[in-house]
Length: 209
Image (cartoon, rainbow, N blue to C red; front, side, top):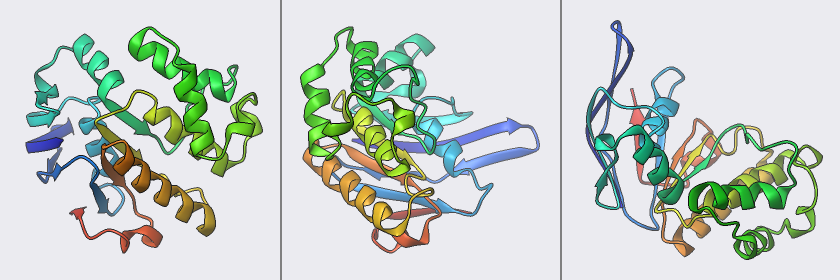
């Protein structure tokens, strides 16, 4: 579902990141680990098409996103990639349900209200649908982030430090949700983390050095 080849990236001439190749099929999970400053989040942003690599190819569902124009890349991302950021970046003036509806509208031009409600129900936060994001707990916000990332049935689900601000109980729940939902929706799941609580749960890992 997602393959990379020979990815490099540079913010300046003094620092060049060489990213290891990865391959992740639908429903499978890869962890990207490594110390701070090794490029974990940078790699995730490259995989999402938010940063363009210096060299290399990223193939998602048989499309090399590096070769796409910026406009086509944005469209492809909205339709094929789900993002769970460390910070949620909700639209603060919109309710939880409206934030999910907005995600589908931006990608397809239509508000998929039924899917939004179904995801909120599945993630056990349907009772929060009419609240503003600021009225939710951190754990609830993370669940809404996962629901938003799944709104457009992505081929690839990318999560950046999804448990960093959660206690042990909620961290366990979020990882279980991400992995079970990626299998259910047949999305390749890639998680960037330095959280030792979840590293041992996955044998398929890439460590940036």
